Image (tube, rainbow, N blue to C red; front, side, top):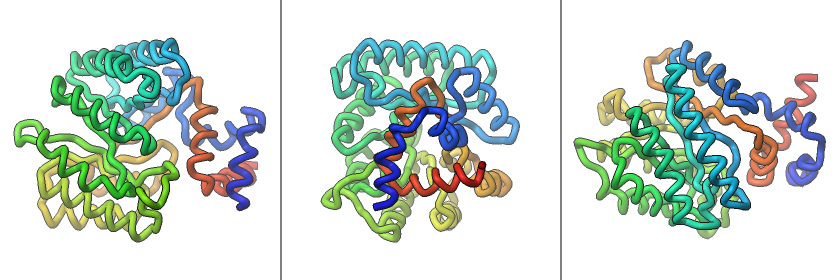
Length: 303
């Protein structure tokens, strides 16, 4: 109850107050901030994926603006020699307003990335978007198979079945490419696993499916038991290093992150940025009220 109460009232606090917490997990407001953070991570042997904040828009004008910002971002990161790719949230491009406009705008971005032999990944959002985002992935993958990936969420009961259904896209020449995460959105028990042990079990089952079927996977977790479980599966299936990487959020568990790199595994850091950081932060609070206690601790810890 305390967490839900704090999560409910924090969005009404001044932005400067929320930024005390958010700045640890968001690279900054500007593209220059994201480039600076990305360069620093690259020097530490870590790749990045960049995300322009601004999902769940209300107009197609915003969708067009978000598209242009990504096109500018691709140009700048290529110019700066950043070792990274791009994460795209379809609701940033109007998925819930006009699916065809969303597809067209995202196709422009993927085509731009592909022109540099780079890569875009569709971020999976909450369950009302799941089918539409899988359909969007199929359409873009059919034209840009080397340049497209998708996020799947282990806590959804449908995920293993989705992996089986999408397996027709996987080939030895061009393996499909997924990011496997637990999932952050609050979903009903009818469609999502709720218990920690249960979610972890299905995460490792999904991961094993990918390794067994020679699918590239970004192992996105900060959970040490899952990382150790992934190590065991990598050894069991003798997975080559070019068929997986670990992925983590910017600002989260930096020591654990470094230990993965030190052990010789590839690692990519998710680097969000943008002027719409406030909406992103407050939405995450509503989606996961347990974050509230961490915010309070962070505020007092940092004085």
